[in-house]
Length: 118
Length: 116
Image (cartoon, helix red, strand yellow):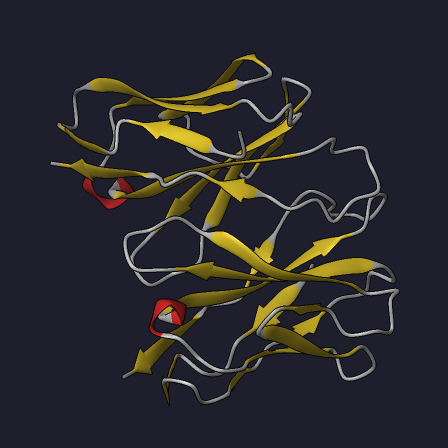
């Protein structure tokens, strides 16, 4: 079974600054996907960024980038130039690759509440 | 259309009531999911349908009964619920589950359920 750990229950950042959210995971799968999802207050969950474990290059999406350390099983999210609209709960999630024992199941971390202050 | 819709937005029901939650997507996705989410907690997977067949049931109590009438529609029938079942119920969908994998799950806005 997979586990995903987010060690920061809450974080805050000033607008325009950079913040990094931590995530570690544990798995015996050899190939898998990692995700960061964002859930703003009273709004629906959306995908922020996705990383395929077999790709060494870190994924980036505009102001969002990850630092994927496969050997350390670490997958942190960096948000640059933070905006008020980034205020949300952020979930790190794991999914085994097709053929894996738990393919199709997203395993979520406990989440990090991020507040961006003006 | 890249949207998953859920109805109703809010539902209040008594422990003896029978009600249903509805989820719809028109993205041609072949996998659909039900999650339960308590406040400030991650979503917990309940059921997965793949090509309209139930593929995963996470040992959910029988008072929750899923149904997938067609590839675009997913229902969750509720009967004899308990107050601790009060939560946000999220529906999600993703592309071909037998595909390369890592498919993004698109989430609906959820139904906020209160059981009195």
